[in-house]
Image (cartoon, rainbow, N blue to C red; front, top):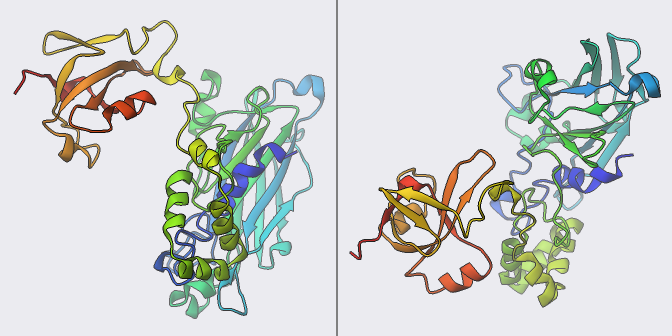
Length: 387
């Protein structure tokens, strides 16, 4: 049932499990896990969150034909524990709830999650929102008592916590509503949703919208793992090429320490070392679709133009860059540079971007050959007067 979401869910689960340079001695691997922690409740409520609340909306228009809608819920998390070598291991655990029949509402179900090895609870509540929609609230809570040593020993606290905690939801006899782009009819019920420490997005089959992932990491609807990726690098929105190249720069001693840190770290190092030249080339970047920058009915970037300082600017125009939005640290290096326009792009909101290559860049032709440009708002460019 959840197979279509497994790779995404695993990337969420293992976010930050072990980070480059994948060695236990690295500072970033001494303070582990920044997302998805459901910890014992601090007396002052000033520590890691002790709960995660998911609100989502189901559309049950099909329910009259298929019977009462049924929701399936899977809770997933890591459970940290100190290994004999001193490293904080974190085996993964999943718990499937009994299917929840939404035919009789309002309804609430409380489930103790003893299988996680700590005192935790998931509360599921459903409430009708008109004839068409049902609002679901799922609240995951850590009920472990707070101990004084947790304030000074984060690892001790983590040993009584859920890490990378998230939910997978599937529905029969209905469809989930996007919280990012809801239909007009669902705008009000979606606006009333209160998600805390997690954010639910649609995953799996776009035609059915029957799967949802409540993630502690902000995602968009229908996220996907790039087919070029050879495996998890424990770094969520992964930059596989850069991380892989960095791993190859590690010394033999550093790689040996990474291999000895954890089986998952060992697998990462060995997998990267085994990459073929063709596999590396595939990691360099792939254009999936140009639809975002080429809405139907608009000219192609190569044919489009925009008026700048009273003159039309199009592909081939010579311009000078005047960054003014302070959007990128590169702006200070590109300010005043002469550039050549590669195209004028419009997104689905009809915002205009001028794509350029920098004339002084010795790799400009190479960048243009595979469509890698700098993008500027029209207000950030001047016509090149030759100075």
